[in-house]
Amino acid sequence: MSDEKYIQDFGLIKDYIVYRLINPDKNKKLLEDAPHINFLDLSIVFHCLIGKDKICTSSNLICNAHFAQWGVPLNMLYEAASENTQRMMGYRIQSMYSVMCEMMTENPERFDDELLAKLKKCIPIYVVSNKDRTEGAACMLYPKLIEDFAQALGTDIYIIPSTIHDLLLLPVINEKSYIRQLIRKVNDSNNDRKMGEIIIC
Image (cartoon, rainbow, N blue to C red; front, side, top):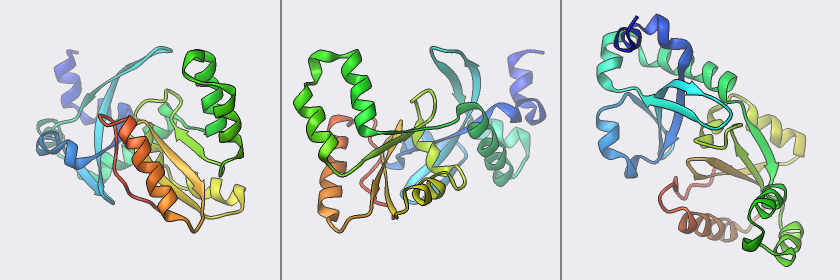
């Protein structure tokens, strides 16, 4: 069966559909031609995985033409994507300190021990992404993932969708100005991938 015939059949392709979270303000044209769901100030879009190995994951955006051919309701598309994304992409939650240590090992010239020491003393920050660390902000949609993590910590948390690739989780504190300053700093360094400046409690 050709690729075109394959993608026209929802029954054949539904097990390979995943979802992604994007910033709608930065993707207005894309959203005009793609089925999507509004989520807070973000948008959920759908992709079909066409290849996945240890190095990278390849996917195609599902457009309105494909969706119309399938003739299925949007909630069915979401349900398939929800199950598949969790199964195929998984998740990882690490402390920011742990992530920075990994980055320091890979790029030692960019970091120093003083920076790591300061980070270790700061308010604990956790980074959530999928196992590939790409398009991992969609982990925010996993049922109960963040709720269970907050219960394990024994505290409410802030959820900050900082880039398309990851979320930041912080224990609730009263200094929201500090949190917003952190978001802006992250966004300024990832301008092409930033999500927004929302704080979810």
